[in-house]
Length: 289
Length: 310
Image (tube, rainbow over all chains, first blue to last red; front, side, top):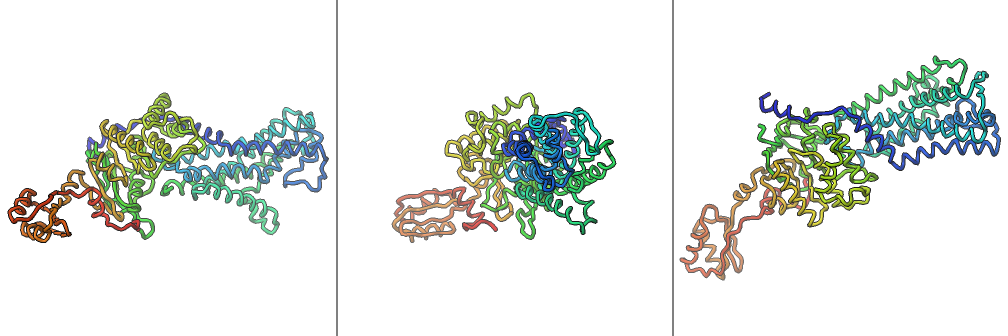
């Protein structure tokens, strides 16, 4: 390298470590009307649920969702509205919310033509993926929290609070119950982050954000369906959705962390595999959008 | 090597079996305003995308400002402002917020000065009044201006502008033209892809012409002009006789119509032609020497067909 070239390289601008781009990404997600509506819809479900339960007590035989039965306890303690709502929304609303966010991540930028301008700023492609995934993860943790808080508030208002009877029969104070509810949200946040990793990968494959969103939703629904088919039991451990309803383990006494491990490991594996796939796909891809 | 702001060496891009860009050797001198011309589909935008590292080259290599791309993109691209294939912004953000987002993504930009730099860039493209409006409400010309403002967020050594006046009204076109002139005067090199030959004639110092993926001409504008052969036209009621004189003098490509004769001058001085015509008793009603317009040169390089290059 000649001296002239060296001076060229040295004249290169300073690169600062900064969270500006990440904050800009989070703001972009937050100000988007679509995401606000989606969050409002997530928060509305527990309200509808609580009001319906108040008006007409349920028949336990035809409850929706496949998880633990929190419905029977709702009328006794408002705390269970949050859990029941999480169980129900995990069946479609939460995955769709994450699918919208993840599907839009890269494909949305490509579709609007903003991707080429980000890349010429320049934004390193790996950094772009990292920031996009961070945005998805933020959504994945926020969404169950919103459902839980909304459920908790409406539940306590409509049915009142008090000590909580766990699935194993023991009673704990509301404080400990809330801690367990937070645990449930964190567990679901991890599960939905795994879904988001798959979504990020799908989003690098197309310039149509809706395409990626629909593909991810279908993948999710396919998981639920396959789970119901006993002949495919060999497949069940590999399904993305297999362990989602394990969050009920956090409501036993003592908490069986061992029972949560497969779910966390499975989510971790999905995250590693699909983030790598997204990187492999995106890092060298021709951006012609 | 570093006297070139853009240098490509055998740059080639194949999409499947189709060669979109074929061994292109661009040489844009520093400080030049380089008009990058070519019909639709001739490979201009593909070349620009390769220059910026958006797509990878099938073969060949290139440098921007003397720095190898795409290996050192992080070092050189902050000094390069680009407008590629039309504007691209978030429709539900205002113009100002869109610029803020781009600036936030730039690790070399100072957060402290963001607002001042954005205001200056918006002012420079005449968009200050509409800065707070949502991008989706912008007209095509305003969108185009915003894209130019984005390229001017930080001081640049090189600007790569792909059809910057597309969609602009005549005033806007003029403003962009004077803006490009001002940027060049400040020392920036400008690579300008355009269809508007009038624009090129007014502001460019150098010209490169693409045709079917190949760079068919690359010269300083003045040289391209002087290379083009001037023609002598004689207005007369004796065209046959005039044509004979022209032929005897050694003009080539002689044409004859009812009221005129014309031919390519080559090295022959126009005054000699007039003298010869008068000497031979041809009734000369008018005489002119025409240099072919840039448009004629362009068409002669890229063909007359209306079809896009396949």
